[in-house]
Amino acid sequence: MNSASKKAFFGDYVFGVASEVYEPAEDSFLFAENLQVAVGARVLDMGTGSGILAILAAEQASEVVAVDVNPYAVRCANQNAKRNGVASKVSFVQSDLFASLAETVKFDMILFNAPYLPSEQGEDASWLGRAWAGGIAGRQIIDRFISQSANHLEKDGAILLMQSTLSNVAESVAQFKVLKMEAKPVARLELPFFETLVLVKAQFSV
Ligand SMILES: C[S@@+](CC[C@H](N)C(=O)[O-])C[C@H]1O[C@@H](n2cnc3c(N)ncnc32)[C@H](O)[C@@H]1O
Figure 1 (cartoon, rainbow, N blue to C red):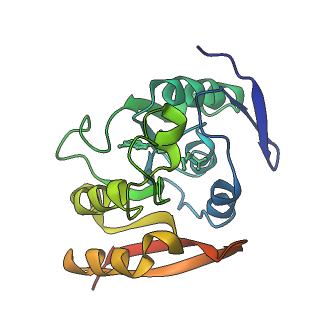
Figure 2 (cartoon, rainbow, N blue to C red; figure 1 turned 90 degrees about the horizontal axis):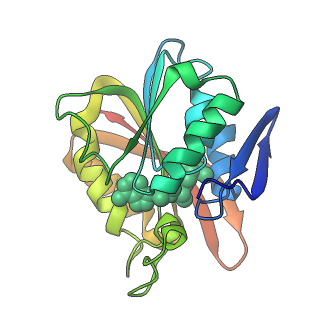
């Protein structure tokens, strides 16, 4: 169950990746390259997978909560936090999005490299499928995340959401606007076959 069959690398960091867990890929690395965490920030890493973003965030953060619906990911990320010397700052929760967090808990930053690809029925039946499959429009998880995320963000906090042009970035921006948040792309990576990864940053409008 906890066999780390593969390894992934970012800078000096090493991540074991169990076979049931999302292996850090272009989206993870684009996110990591653009991750700036203020000293002392409280950070939520939603969908932590191998824990890559939680572990990088922990260098500057005072506290990181790493959440995943996949119990294998929670265990894998926990092992990687120990391996990379940040275990004392990171706590791990198995949860469907925010369901297992206290209603009143708030963060300075919320990170989510979401499952954002359009998928057909049943493609999310495995843990690995759930890492990428976003339903028919690619927005099944993204929409739920956005609608709940503002309740868990400090007034001057920021949300970073990774998605793809295949799952309608403008729709995310519009949904954040309904929540009185201003959202804009802060990083992009063009992929083959007419897809661009987009990192969206959202903050409450002033
Ligand atoms: C694209 S992977 C990103 C993993 C890691 N953060 C990274 O950047 O490499 C998406 C992650 O979201 C998790 N996930 C999917 N649906 C979720 C949900 N409803 N609640 C919490 N996590 C979820 C998956 O298990 C997976 O680990």
